[in-house]
Image 1 (tube, each protein chain N blue to C red):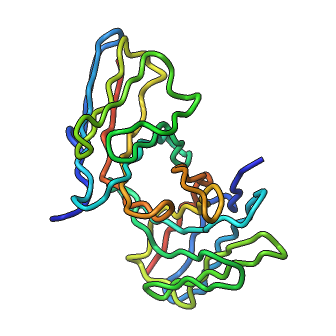
Image 2: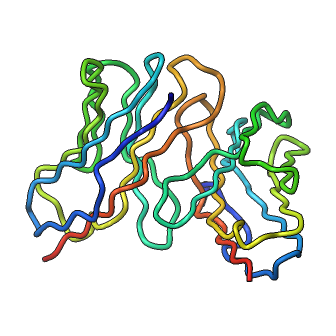
Length: 115
Length: 112
């Protein structure tokens, strides 16, 4: 099938702690992979993406590496801030090169960072 | 602001009523998508337009749901005879490439 599995939350960390949110996917091909973030009361914002194996997406101190051998795209940040508190969604496109539209999302991981 | 906009942001309706939501995509984007998000879940794909053509529809889009994009710009999503199970956040996204999608703030629907 075509699915995305993320670690369940909530994740609670102290400021400046290291963050990892695990994400794995199933696919018949080599899809583009994404992390989106949703702040309270807002829509989804694209955080980072990677389009092929071994690509590393990065933005705002967050990183994720496309691992084809483990079908994973784990999100990491070395030092979280209170302002990073949000829900994080891992997503995949149907297949790289597909002209169809849909994204498949994980269930989301709630992150709360305490000062 | 040149992002995706949606109207209304919130809608409360009684069961059995019809509702219509509007989405205005980023102006140069020819692709437009609708998703539905229920509490504690990730967004689920509903439908996809390229210009004015509706190219993909999910099984979630029952015959009570209809979406249009008449001039290839804004889009509307109508739900007829609403049911309590339709209560959700309805998200619109747009893009100029097949994969990277930019989302609007969503319309939260509550069916009483």
